[in-house]
Length: 85
Image (cartoon, rainbow, N blue to C red; front, side, top):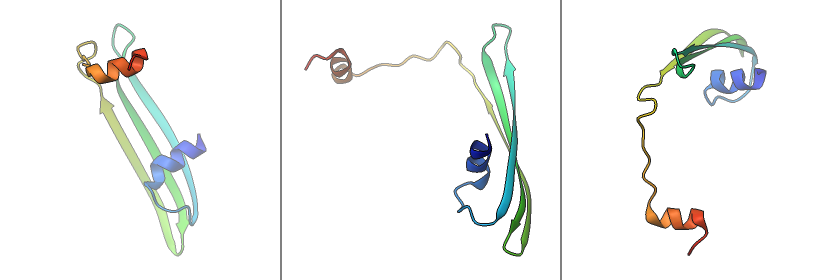
């Protein structure tokens, strides 16, 4: 969405200026249909004050260790989740 592209592209800057944000995403899946990598590209164009902006940000994330991650829930948290004090 425009809002998502703006949020990623602005990197926390205020919304001042006349900027447009566009984006695309690319997803890689393995033979089992599991996402193993994704890439997001955001393009920002326009003007802020007297400055012309033409910027592209690309972020790529690779996912590894799929199916091998374990989580140990502390006993106190287990009791809270189970509803026992």
